[in-house]
Amino acid sequence: MTLRWKQFHQQYEALSLRERILVSASILIAIVVLWYILLFSPMYASHSDTQTQFAKLQTSIKTLQQQQQTLQQRQQQDPLRELKERIAQLNKHITDTDERLKDKLHGLIPPQQMAKVLESVLQQHHELTLIKLQSLPATPLITRAAASDKTEAKTPVQGKSSEVYRHGLQLEFEGSYLATLAYLKALQTLPWEFYWDEVRLDVEKYPRAKVTITVHTLSLTEGWIGV
Image 1 (cartoon, rainbow, N blue to C red):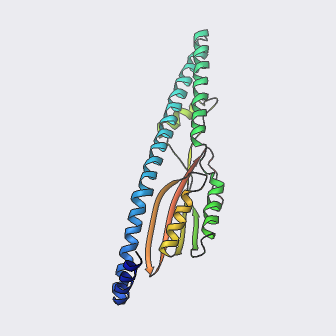
Image 2: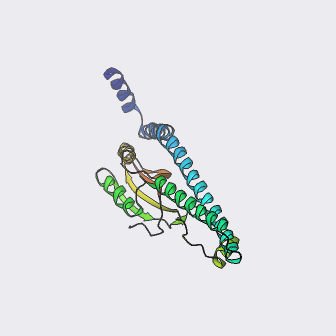
């Protein structure tokens, strides 16, 4: 192995500066592609499936709420015991579904801590320099239709269920390729979970590169991330 490395080093030293840059860039691209195939792609697919489950749970809750509203209106017109029992069952179903939704959110990093944690891990990698840390606007995981909003405005729901919000964060830093790879691996070992949206790498001046990472987490509150 040492002999092969010496041969490679001799061949590398014999190259011109431009050829060295091309070889280094090729190695970098191979590392990034390998990291994407082995780590990022499977993790992103798993996170997408989880968010689909969140969306299905919220859709189920909203359907149950609509049934509850209909039954409440009928109860006001003709209060029957059967309708009261049905409403109580729907309330329990909504509560149970809300609890399942909260269980799904357990383990995700809180929005208020995500910026601090990512920056703290970055500071442990001294070859990397932070350029910008920016929070993105919080948005609902499910966007309600305008017609649905009008209906809800006319008939308020008692015991309204939890809303799931998406909190995004964009981190931009500069450093070497190996230090960047080490930082990405360190983020994957954190005790909290979050979702990867994008990892962009721009080589402006070899051997340093500018890296932009976009991630997000989910929570039941709309508050901004503390950046």
